[in-house]
Image (cartoon, rainbow, N blue to C red):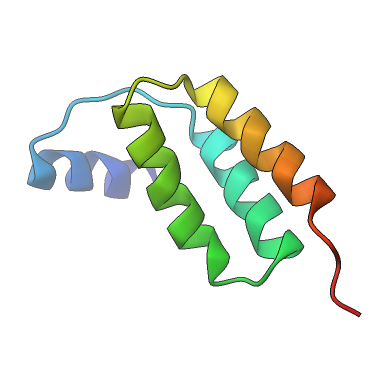
Length: 74
């Protein structure tokens, strides 16, 4: 996975550090709270929030809180 991330960063002209585990955990929470296809959209929105200045820890905490409060389908 690290090779892929490095290749994507190079391709997009990026050189950023981030918490891979926090992103994966938030994606997992989103997928389990709603549906699997919510995970990539959630991670995209996390990136937008980070670009606007939010910290990774703050973003991940908000996603986790939202996912845990999300009503479960019956």
